[in-house]
Image 1 (cartoon, rainbow, N blue to C red):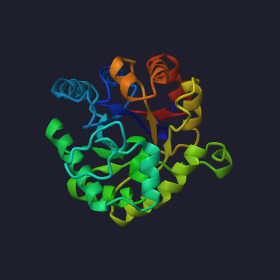
Image 2: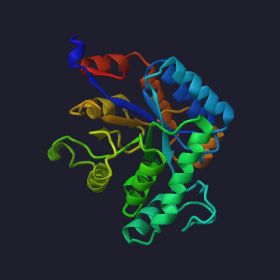
Image 3: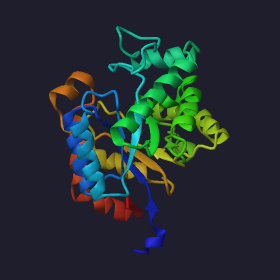
Image 4: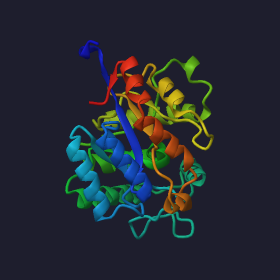
Length: 280
C-alpha cells in the first residue's frame, strides 16, 4: 500500500470521566493504538486525579493521541458555575428540553459562555494544559445560542484548540435515511460559519451517529462511516465496560461493550487497511 494515499482520521472516544468502566476501556484502546482522541467530561463522576494520571500515562505511549474537553450542558450532570440557568432539580436540562429551550431562544449566552469557560479551566487544572480540542456532550455545542457562546469561550480560553462540527460530506442521497444525522448536518452549517468567522479550526467531515439504543453491528456502521470521510475527518465512538455508575447515569450501556469488542479485535485494523485509513 502506498502510504501517501492514506487518509488520516480522528477516531474519538467520547465520555472519558463518565464511569470507571468507560475510562478503562478507552485507555486500553488508546494503548493498543485503536483510538487517537478522547473527550473528557470534567463534570463526570469518574475524573479524579488517578483517572487523569492513568489517561496521561496511556497517551504517553501514543503521543499522537489528542485529549479534548467534552463540554457538558445536559442532564444528569451538575454545572460548575453557581449561577447557571435554567436548571432542572439542580441539574442541567435534559437533552430534549435543552434543545427546545435553545430553539426558542430562551438561553442566556453569557451564562452558557461562563460555564464552558469554567469547564475549560477545570480541564486545564486537571491536565496542566488546555484541551487539544473542544466538543460537546450530546452535540450541545451546535444548538442555537449555545454555539455562539461556546465558540466565543473556546476562542478566549483555549485559542489553539479546534472544535468538533458534526456535518457529513457524503451526497444527500446517502444521508437522507438518518433523521438524527440530518439534524446534525443542519445545525453544523451555522456552527461551521461561526467557527470560520472566529478563525477556529474544525474537522472537515464527521461520522458516528446511529441509533445507539438498538443492538447493532458496530463494524458494519464503521464501514459506512469511513466511506467518503475526508482526510482529517472525525468518527465519534463510545466504547466502554458496563458498570454501576454507567447504568445509573446513561442509557447507552451494552452497545458500548460491542463497540469496544470491535475496536479491540482483529477485524478493525483490516477495515482501516481496506479503506486506506490510518490513525497514526
